[in-house]
Amino acid sequence: MKTVAIEKGTSLTELYRSLGGDYPKFFKMDIQCKLGYLLVEKLLQDAPDRFVPRKDVAVLVFSRSGSLADDKAFAATLDTFPSPAHFVYTLPNTVCGEIAIRNRFMGETRSYVLDSFDPEILGELVLEAFLDEESSSVIAIWADAPSEEEWEARAWLFTAQDLMPAHHCCHHGEGGCHHGEGHHEGGCCHGEGHGEGSCCHGEGHGEGQHEGCCHHKGE
Image 1 (cartoon, helix red, strand yellow):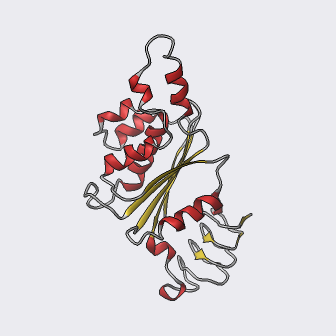
Image 2 (cartoon, helix red, strand yellow):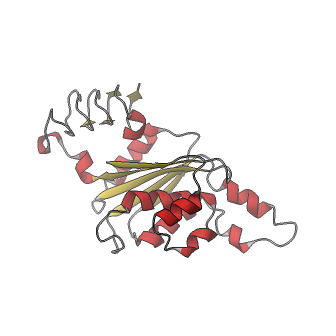
Image 3 (cartoon, rainbow, N blue to C red):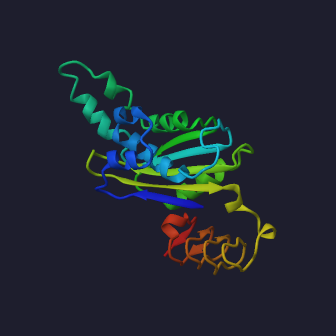
């Protein structure tokens, strides 16, 4: 599993340029789409065969505010002339389309609006996405931007290997995945998870549980 984030206060234009800056449409996007775009750029900047069309990558986008920032910007134009440039971003799932077009993803895409960040729901939906036999990896994004100035942005890249059954990996080694107690770093556990960054289905007591996507309790 790989995870990235964009810290509040970051210049998105400077970040865009530092990541290559080869997609001028970026400047037309609303704030949520910019965040989603940049998170995926950070996740995949070293990926081989980057822009080969793929059906095996699922994209799940989560937020609390959805397209609210652009909804407000569009509403402000209604007294004069409604802005088509804002109107195209007045749906929370537009970010999924922008990511799919940019990266030539042709697999499953979904957008969810939640009351708050919920790692349990995120984890369950990531697992559900892997039920599609074509999905070999899942990109999960939390991109919440109630305004141009306020946002939360982080993303995770999960592969099928992250969810391998116990008999396919080391039971007690670093990075292992097993179904008893998980005391190792980076583990994907189905019992108690005490390792750093573990993705657990029982109780999570280690560091990084928020990022590691625990399915029951994270302390």
